[in-house]
Length: 83
Image (cartoon, rainbow, N blue to C red; front, side, top):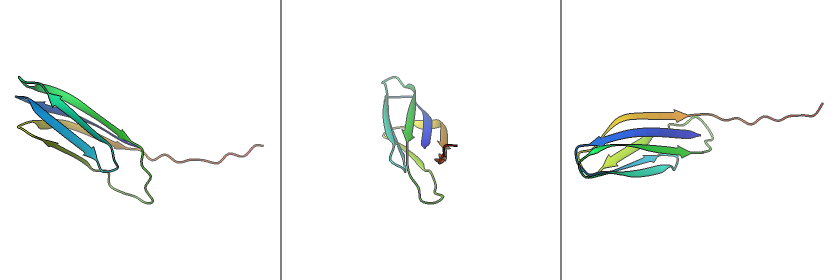
């Protein structure tokens, strides 16, 4: 499971788009007059081997990403036997 939170700020109206390489995406609009917003992304992915988790954000104006938290968690299944 891969999850990410991004805080974006802008002094003016802006659209911020973020994408996780494993398939998650989010978009947010900062209203006219500026401000901040948080984008949250989460995706479940299956990797055959160790792999990089990449978070890419873009904007149409002078918005900037002030904080980004990216967490990749490995989940393993276990077999259980009765007895």
